[in-house]
Length: 277
Image 1 (cartoon, rainbow, N blue to C red):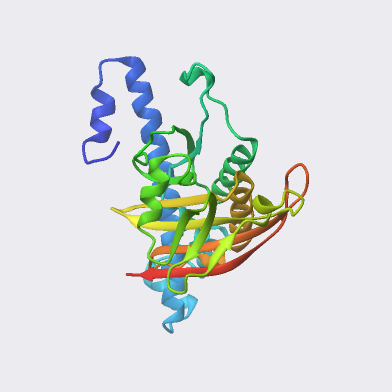
Image 2: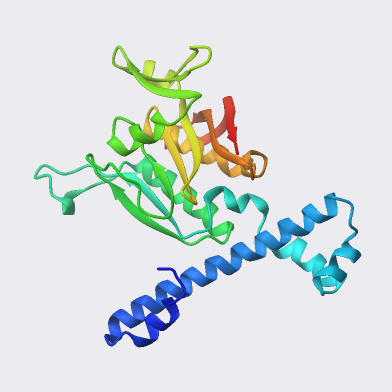
């Protein structure tokens, strides 16, 4: 919901239930925009300071006190919030149909669920509202707005189409085994766990693109555990990874895990590969 007449649209809707729904959507939208504006103001202050202005000079030009400048720098959302967009952010994982192939029988891999939950925690920490969506085996499109797609090419066409836009990495099935390939060198990144179940190391793919004014982040493991590893790494490295001018960023992440499974360590093994504006 957006546009100049959105407020009047809510006020004039004759259906009280729909009016309440529209009001709720608009409140969330305004809250997310207000938070993003606070982030943009903090970013602008820091950029102005890097150009040579003192914080006292910046305060004077903005018409606020130096103490307020200090509060903004301390309390406003960090720059890396924009890695996921403006919000709200839809976070999706693949669902697997039951025997009768009915939606009410969809169930979810526990590792995908853990990945989804970890991403949602990070979004909340960054003051980003989130929703969930299910990725069916025939899903071809990402929902409107900002999104995190936790899905590999073996699960749904949407994952394959997103990966196809990556100029640096590809996700390919070679002789029945999925692996990530660095296009410039041909180097392959395979899952040790897939080759030997006693070797608790897996790999995954991380991609981020800015497309038509929104952000789409993709997380894809060679197994679903690899997706957990990508989310684990992203939590600890988001501030270093985020680059305001980046239109496309991707990387290969390797992780260690225990028997639960839970991630015990993660590291980047290729990338980040970045295409800038």
